[in-house]
Image (cartoon, rainbow, N blue to C red):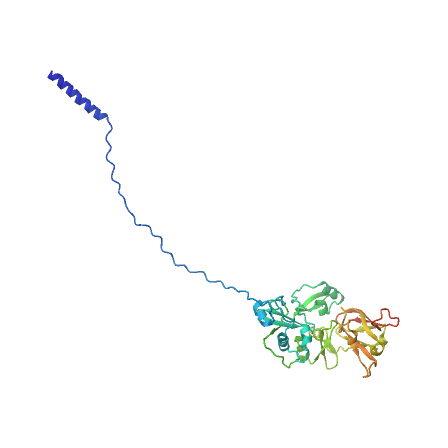
Length: 381
């Protein structure tokens, strides 16, 4: 009996050991996690910055809606080739007229209303500039710096292979003098300069506020050139009623002052006088010379007045206003209605032929049967 109990005890122990060997091992306990606490994150300190340099700006200065001060106006607008709608003053302010008389060295006896009608002003670099057109100056034209000949120049040189090209062909705004070389237009030399706005700087004067007119008498570079070379300047009316400067020399010959400066006319070219006895004739004249047509008349007593009908302005340029025939009348005796004479002057500006035609009639009669005509043909070489 004891042996049987021992057997069962040993068997039970063996079974328990066998079961223990076949079972999964118990995993070791998990290690305790280590928690590391970091200090709170701080944003990086701001880096010092250098602000970009301020860009210079030019603020447009306001112009009063009733701006009548030319100097304040130009200070405000800066640059304008002609006053705009903001300018409400006169076309040519007195202050600018006075300044032009001084800057251009005009005669103080020149009527200011005439000067105002023949002048222009503008703004450049916040300053006032003015120009007078009375002596054939191209005030409103920009300087022509083109060295390419025009069709008119080509045509002129075909007919005049070795001649100087007159301003009436080149245009007065050109900065060059031109001549024909072997029948082709060629730039001879530079005469003038253009300013910052493109105008001929030789003819535009800076006007100073508060300027007063001096007692000098030189109007422009052509006048100065005339006097320096022994001539005397005379101002006459042109075909548009403006004023033209003539250089009269000691021998009584004369040249339009700009034609003289450009070399288109020389001293010694005396005026060719044409009278009624030359009616229907053909005459010869030199380029640059003056053709003076003198016709007798008595408009005061008869109502008949000579007037210029037609010609060729490209060859013979009228030095008077054709629309005002009585302006050319010179009275004879002091008695009212006494006969006098009509004097018409023409400048020979280029080679060619021109037939000058005149009529003597009563202006209020459309088809006057008693009208008298006169004509003469002038060939300019």
